[in-house]
Length: 177
Image (cartoon, rainbow, N blue to C red):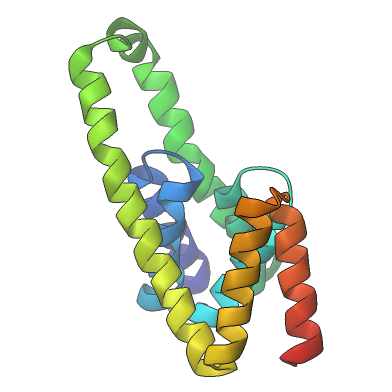
């Protein structure tokens, strides 16, 4: 029962503070489930994140469903999903009139533009943590191969990220298992 409460808190906090959607919530979820409650290791979280990114739909709900199920089965998945969805739902219902009134306000646009660099920094820190974990477990050569090939496939070949993720998972299964 205590695990369900911790799951609820672990996903409620990112649900409340994750302004900007999934990319903003990922580092917050990672902090809660890896560092705060220790439901997963950084490596496990990275694998779940990669798998979740390869599937369609919002990333926060996919992470909540999987991690909730991993920790406490079906009740855990339900609790984590509710904790992820309810803050946004309540905020949208309560603030809809206010949002419509001020949607073209220069102050609101400036606030939104100031939040984007913060989200970028949070994602960079998360990526660096994944790099550090990958480097320690797989070694520099394997990590460099994955980083460089992913960059080239995404930026130069313009391959869809889902195919790059599947390729990286295949590479890991063949060469790193």
